[in-house]
Length: 246
Ligand SMILES: [Zn+2]
Image (cartoon, rainbow, N blue to C red; front, top):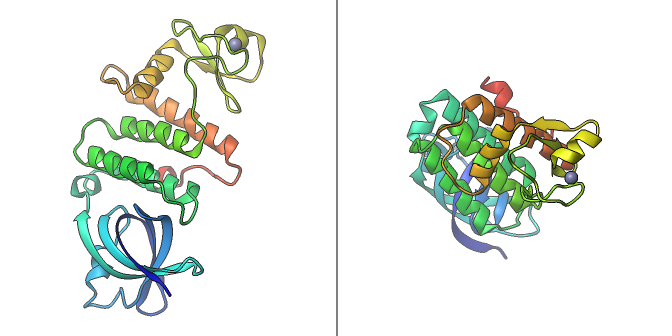
C-alpha cells in the first residue's frame, strides 16, 4: 500500500532515467527530501516533465511508500519558476548553492516545515532582488546551520565563555566558533575576524540591514561559514555551484 500525498516542493536536481523517464530530487513540505520518478517525463506530451526543473517551486502529488527508495510522482503544477533569478548569473549561482546545501546536507524523508518555509522565502527574496544575492545566501546559510544543529553563538567566546566584545578584532575557530580577543591572542591557528566583519555577522544574526557593508566582506564571511560546515560535516566537499558559475 502507498499513500497519496499532495504537497509543495522545490526541485533540487533532475536526471534522465531510461529512454523516457526522469528521476528528480525534491525538497517537500510534507516529507523533506525525497527522490521520485516521473514516468514518461521526457515525452513530448508530458506536462510534468516540462515544469520539473531545478529551483522550481511546485505543487505535487506523489505515491509514497517508506520501503521504497524512489517515490512515484503523479502530477505537478508550477507555483513559481523564479524567472528573475534565471536571468541573472549571480542570483543563479547563489540560488543553486542554496539548493545544493539542502540536497547534500538534509536527511531523506525527514520533514522540516520551518526549513521548507525558509527555503521558499529566501528564493523569493532573491527573485524579488530584496538584497544582493551574496547577502541573502549568507542569511540562509546562518539559518540553515542552526537547523542542522551547528548554530554559531555570537555572544560568548567559544573557548573561555566570556562575553565577546564587538569593538575589538576577534578570532574564529572552525571547530568551536567565535573566540574573544584575549583567547585569539593566546591561541594559535585561529582565523582573524575584523571588528567590521563581526558587525556584519551581528546584523545578519539579528535581521538588520546590511547596506553599508561590501560584497567582498560578505563573500569573506560566506567562505568562513563554508569552511566551518566542512569541518563539522566530513562528507561535505564544499559548494560545487561556486566552481561552475565562477
Ligand atoms: Zn575567550
